[in-house]
Length: 330
Image (cartoon, rainbow, N blue to C red):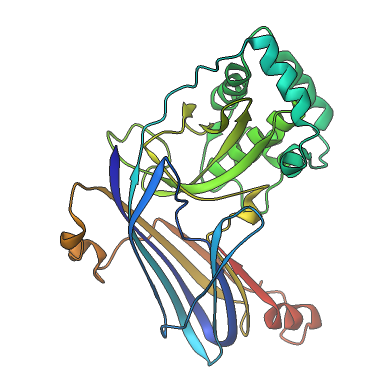
């Protein structure tokens, strides 16, 4: 088993004071047989009360609002979580039976969301690639992992070439992207193969600095295996998701799992800094309140600046509306 201390800070700096900020946070680790949350604290600017809910996919989420004018918004989640190693499953049914079960799963309404494909221009081309990769003489898991391997070997991990709005066609054309792009692509390719699959958000944790995306927010995919259930595959690193990954939320896509998102009234222009710090720990709970969780200055893992283009006049009605209905997400 592996135990991690994780500090996740989301910090917005607004060009001028904003108000009526209403936000949703999905920063609460999943708790099940494979993952145990030992400790969590969440600190937010002005210490608003947080209403906790469960969503459609049983993720825990929090809602809070800050109505008065403010120039900054900081959200800090501190957690200690323990993760159990997971091994490649050895299903006790034959390969033929596995594929028969996959056919039956198409009628399972609880998996309906995880079999629905998006619409994208490259669907035929990608479908042909998936068809060439699928071999029903092999297990369902082997096939799913083979699709992940295709992405790992044919796409370049490169920051800055895509955004959170990049679609499948853009990623497919660029043959490059980051973890959320690869997770998005793997999700669609597995669904083309009619394998129930879902998007997962979380963290990937450091060990020997051998994984891409260590010490940051991360994304991967879980595929549903007959008689077994959900198991994670990380296409960014072409590996089984085990005790190096901490799960925050699952959903149909990225939008279901966004760690922080919200709306506010005020200036569109803002700066977003995200900092994620992960450390291995064997500490007891009583020793956790140390410098790691204090307010020491951390270097941001991610910075985004949203500015109004210089050629947009101040009286432009579109930009005025955007300012009043600004959406922020991380």
